[in-house]
Length: 310
Image 1 (tube, rainbow, N blue to C red):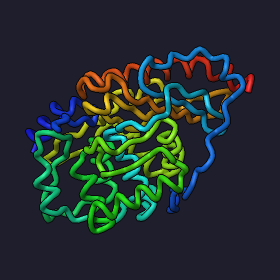
Image 2 (image 1 turned 90 degrees about the horizontal axis):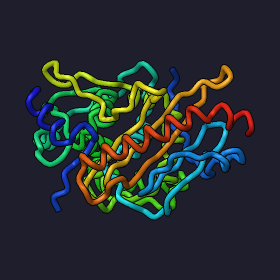
Image 3 (image 1 turned 45 degrees about the vertical axis):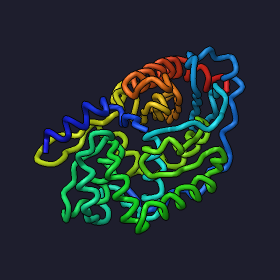
């Protein structure tokens, strides 16, 4: 099974891309209707915002560091899977340290394991996988086939699950977001940086989700390793979150950073969308990583002063 994994990694270039050819058990917070206020000190920050697309950054418990770019709905590719995970964990909460429910892989998920046009992680028909392991395949390996499997497991069919995703978006105040699929393969799934930041704030409240997106690699079939598509993970305080790249979407990245300030740990969340849109997933994904890294570096440097001035 290593060969399909390698092939998928080459095709997706480690970014969750697809090639455009046409401890406690609790439910996630049901709503985050208000965006954090913009810090007055943030107005004087000279952050290296990307010259294209959209971006937004916030410090949990402190406030917004700003937003750039017209907040017009754009394709988000595999960032879609963040909402898929949010709904799955809301419908089927997983206790920290627990594998969660058992999920039987169906023939469709197995057949889709070897697609040549999208990112996948191989699963075997008739094999039972833990809910957590499938969440890892979806969020770490950006497996489209697993996203669709989880949707069918939860709702019986994908369109019923998509309806749940859109209801969840409404509950979270994501007024400029529309989901038309569960994996991001559809360019018609669109959102904005500020809407995706609302989702990130909500889903990061779940301890199991936080553990999954902080995982650098997970074991696949036959001992093969599935590497996280987020190349920033594990450095500069990055503890998540999700990549997404396609030809129509360009490169997208939602990132989470832990930063110690005056003895207190702060969670910084950022979203970068629409980098090199219309080029190719490789170029877009690289541009999203580069733009995000520049923002993370600058925010980490400025954060102590920003919090001090409030």
